[in-house]
Image (tube, rainbow, N blue to C red):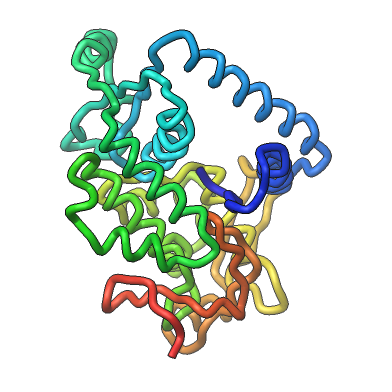
Length: 287
């Protein structure tokens, strides 16, 4: 669940805010009304399905799948939906969304072994989703600090810790994934596919998509002193290279001033009073 998810808005405003963000970051701002309509239809279809039948969530243990499962369980579970989930253990050579790697026999086996989403998991999902949508990281960091809270859903703790690491770094102002991109580009120019692969190698469970990498590259290319330079008329043709300003941030000689961006329910900018402390492995308030 990427982009804005603020808590203090009604369903219609929530969909419109997300539609605006998706339209902007897919390069077609005029598509926002159509995206909002699709989001409304999606919500209505989910509610109708949940009212009449079992809903099976097919999830991997990486953050991308975990975020979607979190949003769905927190929304549908308290309403009484009959939820279950099917998953698979990480493949040794392909960690991450392991269900996407299953063949026909593996899919049948995973479906037969699906387990109900129990009340403890629903309760945790509600707590975590509320904290994820909060305007500060305080509640989410406190939840992640408590391993016992995740007995019902162990994979969610590691996933939420990755989300917290997307707050601006204390020393360089970069999100974890932005730092990965600069490190890759410090080795030389690269296209979108190569950068997605580089970010995947940096994760125990790769979770970024091409769109999410593109969003970060465009952000790094903004401002008076961009950290990367982009060329190419489309994402398929795009190439990125690091600038001198980017090399300075990558080398620790300067700190990037975070441009306005959404992270869960928080709207971040250069004045954000919270940062990621890599040494302590947690979000802290600026001294």
